[in-house]
Amino acid sequence: MKHPDERAWWRDAVIYQIYPRSFADGDGDGTGDLAGIRARLDHLERLGVDAVWYTPWYASPLADGGYDVADYRAIDPVFGDLAEAEAVIAEASTRGIRTIVDVVPNHVSDQHPWFQAALAAPPGSPERDRFWFRDGTGPDGDGMPTGWTSSFQGETWTRTTNPDGTPGQWYLHLFTPQQPDLNWNNADVRAEHEAVLRFWFDRGAAGVRIDSAALPAKDPALPEVPETWGAGEHPHLDRDDLHDIYRDWRAVADSYGTGPADERVLVGEVWLPDPERFALYLRPDEMHTAFNFDFMTRPWDAKELRESITRTLDAHAPVGAPPTWVLSNHDITRPVTRYGREDTSFDFAAKRFGTPTDLELGTRRARAAALLTGALPGSLYVYQGDELGLPEADIPRDAIQDPMHFRSGGVDPGRDGCRVPLPWTADGPSHGFGPDDGAPPWLPQPDGWGDLAVERQAGDPGSMLTLYRRMIAARRTEPGLRDDAFAWLDLPGALPGDDADVLAFTRGTGFACVVNLGTESVALPDGATVILASAPLTDDGRLASDTAAWCRL
Ligand code: GLC
Image 1: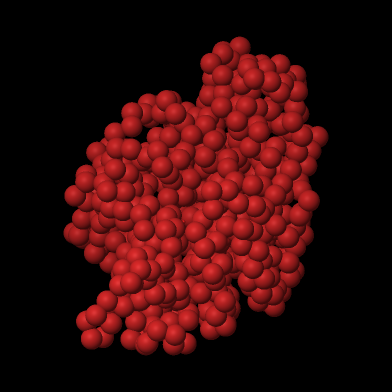
Image 2 (image 1 turned 180 degrees about the horizontal axis):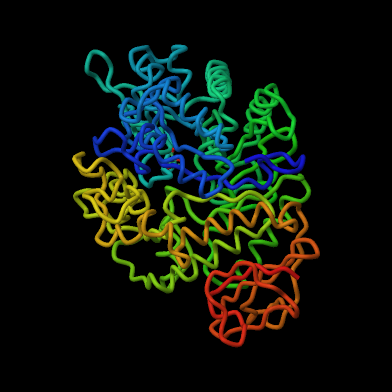
């Protein structure tokens, strides 16, 4: 939707993340697709989002859910074709919804023509120079070139076989062996990605989400990862050369226009512990925004969240970039499950099967978290299904597909639990995900999924969907939410300190958000009128435990 002022569209946009495999299945093969998305655009319009980000929809063997791209200029046949992608971008645009596509610069699929050519070419060839091929160590070359650990656990090198059957060189993959890492010192790699950006901008994409954006640059000497390292010293994380790459990308984006409505944006997936290093990616000639994962990983605790918010705002202020607020995505345990656990923080390494959760409590907190993140300055990401309050599903072991599960030796349940096909209708074999006579969804939907269906929630004033719709509508109309103004508000119980369990802040002079993370009810600011609350107030007008309210002052 159009913004009433001249603020660049992306600075406070609500961006809905679609995982195409699991959104809606138009052709009945059990996997979501573009036909399904086109038929469900009403949902996005009714929700009121400004943009959609699609996780990869390109031709791919789907070894890592599409983050193994074989051809950026083709849509995977399981999802549709290029004409349909152009159509869905155009149709969303007529509803005022922009499109962000995913670009994965760190690696491609092992089925990508470049990698196939590299395997067929000899050591030292230009084809191999686009990747990281190296001889092994030791007399037989059977030792890995480095001992680096994969982001998915385990080794990062796989040995190739020469055309004559003898063991050959090794190649680097920070993720699975099906995802060989690209060499960003190679001019072809740079030129190709700039061409891919233009390809999608020319088709109407309003931005790109940059996958694993802190990983693509490598130290060509391939040293071991030291025990401690200074800024820019890690051999494959957050290297200084990355900034030149993103400056080049920004120039490509800016060549499409820099007016508030036509800017093409770069959104980085930047996992870095140091907020100052993180902010460097957001300098005015680099990315427009980057995901703020610090907030997402924190426990449901007022002190922790306050610290994260302050730290985030402080890190962004000097570079003038708006923060982003993210409660989850296709890699993360669903918020209603996370917030109902004893340990409410998120850590990839700590994921285990069967961790108990109280979904009622988790849902109550996830509702409050939605209003909290929705009231903070910056852009807001909503992962498909969070607007329905879907829990993390327990996927039967024999149905799991995520490589993270397998690479952990079966210890980590992986990420499929947040990727279960959406329920649209209360009834039907796939709850409206696909046609009733279609194949079963690619991941099984758990019992009770139909109770969370869009159809069920749409008319229910107390549902998560209604809360999200109201919140997004109010973000648009509340004047206080339309600029960067933010100040912590001193309320009893909201003072900085170890036992403060209330978060309260104003946006401008007329708007406040108050979140009670404690167990006792708290008073709202004097004279406040509640415009939206995540749960009913107490009989005497106080904010109950695990509840957030938006107030006009
Ligand atoms: C990002 C994606 C994740 C993928 C990984 C490798 O973290 O969000 O889903 O597995 O990159 O591309």
